[in-house]
Length: 222
Image (cartoon, rainbow, N blue to C red; front, side):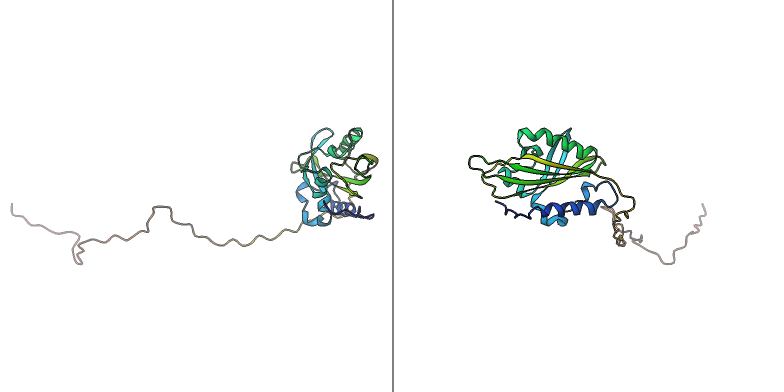
């Protein structure tokens, strides 16, 4: 089981959101290709990236170990709604569309009721949109953290509260400029001789004559 966070254990969500904000600069959102795991090491086990595959449906492409612990299995390839109880799945589907279409950032407070052998469990999720390599808004960078004794898995949650914040590009902020690494000077490489080609050798006569004239007069009395 992954180590569980204390009362202030939702801090990795704020760290992940700060990372996302720093990447986007004055744009609406960053690109999926800009996400570097080294920049979110403190939140990595709680983080995930989902891909929109249909309206209201997003499938997990990358998921941290905490999400697998909650479900008791590998969760990559599963829909994000797998963590939500059936009664709240329609609400999450609507929220996903808001995040993609508005676009917006959403924070959700989650709660799992006490069941046989399962203690009550609180959790929080954050969803932030990303652009794909094709330029469409079809990815989400998010995180899911539970606080308390996990008990037996799988654990699924009801949505107790959601907060949606539309994203506005801020033209007053300086654009994010990536430093270009100067291209290294290419070494001069001699073109190799084609295969089976031998170096040219000057022609030498087998029987050279040092003073042989070019023309010789032959006299005949016939």
